[in-house]
Amino acid sequence: MAANQEALAEAAALLRGARVGTLATVHEGMPHAALVTPALDADAQPILLLSTLAVHTRQLKANPACALLVTGAAVTENPQTAPRLCLTGEARLILSERVRARFLAAHPYAAQYVDFGDFGFWKVFVHEVQYIGGFGRAMRLNFAALQHEISLHRPSGYG
Image (tube, rainbow, N blue to C red; front, side, top):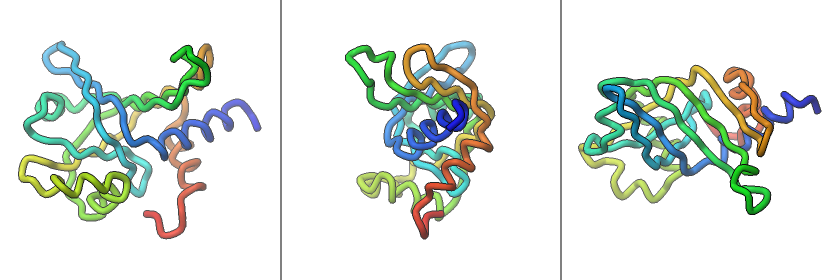
């Protein structure tokens, strides 16, 4: 397997399995990072369930630019051996029952609050992908190629 194809396969597995990540936002020059729980829509774009009470949601409303970092398990005690994927793009509030169902399939516990009035679904429209497959192994990946790789391993009836 070529290095880029191997990285795509690893990144796809990491993103498919990600149930927690770090969302980075910025507003008026001030950065903010928050723990979020991503899921993927039918096009393998990340979706987030966010409260309007959260700082990061208010920042996304003012400036949709963001980055989503998902991290795998470290291979050794050195945390830099962990694979990680940084998706950079813009987040937009979306309305979709299909997104709701997909999110709840990934995060069933969210059924407790998904219908609260202050929560909404946000989709990260990815522009750039940076994959780090461990210490000293960093590369940019094509997001369309990553989406394709994810689609190859989609369970039947998924999406």
